[in-house]
Image (cartoon, rainbow, N blue to C red):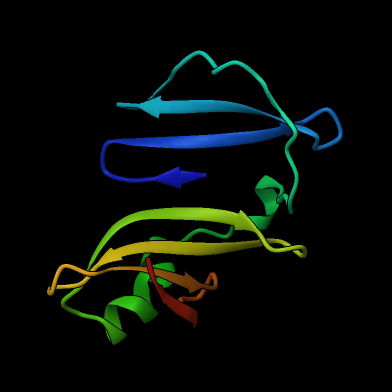
Length: 112
C-alpha cells in the first residue's frame, strides 16, 4: 500500500501470493482493479498487521528531520508483519526513504 495526498494504491496478493490485484482509492472511492499481474513475490502482510496511528508512525522522522516534508507513506511486508516507509523531501531538495516502525522508531534512512 502507498498513500499520498492525492490517492492510495492497495496491492492485494492472490493465487497463493504469486499474483497481485492493484486497486486505487481516489477521493474516497474505490476504482475498478487494474489487470491482474503475475510473477509477484516478496513478503506480504494482513490487515491485522497494520497498526497505523499517523501521529506515531511519523513521530520519529518528524522529530529527527523537522524541516523535511513527508510526501507519501508505504506499508510493506517485512516477513513478520508490516513496516512503514516514508518518502521524504529534504529542504535542500534531496529525496529520502525513511523506514520506521509502528511507533515511529527509525530503522534506516536511505537517499533515493
